[in-house]
Each structure stands twice: as structure tokens, then as C-alpha cells.
Image 1 (spheres, rainbow, N blue to C red):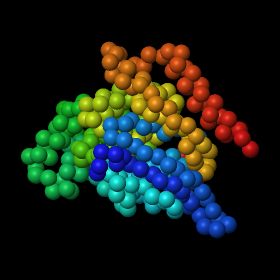
Image 2 (image 1 turned 90 degrees about the vertical axis):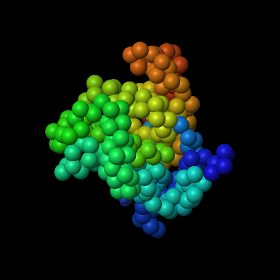
Image 3 (image 1 turned 180 degrees about the vertical axis):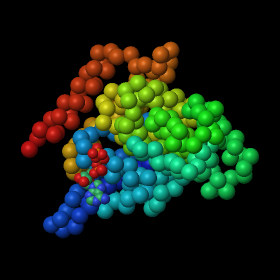
Image 4 (image 1 turned 90 degrees about the horizontal axis):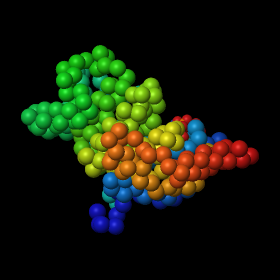
Length: 263
Ligand SMILES: Nc1ncnc2c1ncn2[C@@H]1O[C@H](COP(=O)(O)OP(=O)(O)OP(=O)(O)O)[C@@H](O)[C@H]1O
């Protein structure tokens, strides 16, 4: 990968789930690059193709036209370089917390001592080291989502893709998880793409926020932001809501609403 090659590049990507008269165009002519260490948040109305975009980058879905590349190479299948966290944590219920986190490294043939070290490191980062021998069904929803995050982090992926990871959590747990995700992104120098329905969540976490149109999804506008860096520097890890923040928030809400009301 040359210095100029972006981590992810989508060139004229469209996704049509149907054929001919049954056309079901989900994404239309998407051009997007994601650079290393970005925290990209995707906002847009329900059904605009956000998950489809994520699935194409993860390698679960092949675009109908156009190309998606990772480090300059066409994405053809999922691999551990791009870890995915879903809204419902996908954990193995028959495995303990530590075995869930160590699962990826074990499949990749990493030696046991190294797996134990990686597992402890990431369980410590998510604050669940003391719970490592518990069964996952003994954990709360927020704790399970933290384990799902640690499981992805344990593979030390180049990129973490999150599809509404906090959507099922209560408001307080959600705020705490936002802080955790921001801190992990910063500490581990990850690159993150996260889908959310929550404008404030996007503003408080993203270094860039992209707003998509209703179906067929296109990118309407992109905002470069620094609120997440501000939050890293404050004691309470909260974003300082200033006039510009409120303007951007309203701008995004207006963009989404205007697009939805268009006939
Ligand atoms: N496997 C599939 N087969 C057919 N149509 C699909 C498939 N997956 C998604 N779609 C359609 O593509 C469009 C985009 O779906 P997608 O799930 O990507 O949107 P989304 O923005 O993530 O939605 P939400 O915010 O509600 O989760 C929708 O009309 C959806 O019904």
C-alpha cells in the first residue's frame, strides 16, 4: 500500500438487490474513501442502504457495479482485518467470556500464551477482566456488547465496522459505551466506521459524519468534526455543546427531513 492508497476506497459502488423490472436499488454510485485512524459515522433514514454499505466493506456483499477496495485490493470476502460489531452481540453462548474473546486468535493459530495475553489485555480495556470465566448468558446486555467489542479488538483488525452497536442499550449504558468506544479507538489507533440513528452520538464520536439520502442511498453531505477529540480531553468525557455543534446538528436533521419529505 503506497502512502496515498486509502485504507478503504469505494468507486462508483451501486447495489441492486433485484433484477430488471424487479430492480431494488439500495445504493447508487457511492464514492467514498476511508483513511487510517478515522472515526467515520454514517447517518441516514431507515432503509437508505447503511447496512448494505457496511456489508460491502466487510466483504459480505459484492456490489452490483463499481468496486470496493481494502488497502488497494478488491474486497472479495470477509476477513479478520475488518471486524464487525452488530446491534445484537454475536457471541458463542457455550463459551466463557475469555474463550469468546480468544476465539479469533485461536482460529488463526496463535499460541496459547499469546492468546491469554491478548485476551487479558482487551478484557482489561473493556473493564471485564474479573468476569473472564463467566458464561456470557450471565452478563447484562451492555456487558455482552463490551465482550463483542473485545472479541473484535482481539483480532487487532485494521478496521472495525459497527452496525448500530448501541441501539439496544438503555440511555445511560449507551453514554458510557460511547466513552468506552472513543477511548478504545484512540488508545488502539483503530479505524472505525459506525452506523447510528442518533445524530448526537455521531457528532460526539465521529471525526467525520456522512449523511445519506433515502433509498437509493447516495452521500448527500460530509462533515469533518473535532468534538470527539475535545471529549477525550475533558474530565467527564462529554462533548462541549457550543453554537456550532447545534448548527451542525440542525443542519443534519434538516438534510434528513428535507430528503424524506421530497416526493
Ligand atoms: N438481502 C436483501 N435482499 C433484498 N433487499 C434487501 C436486502 N438487504 C437489504 N435490502 C433492501 O435494501 C434497502 C437498504 O437496506 P439496508 O438494510 O442496507 O438499509 P439501512 O439504511 O441499513 O436500514 P435501517 O436503518 O432500517 O437498518 C432496503 O430497501 C432493504 O429492504
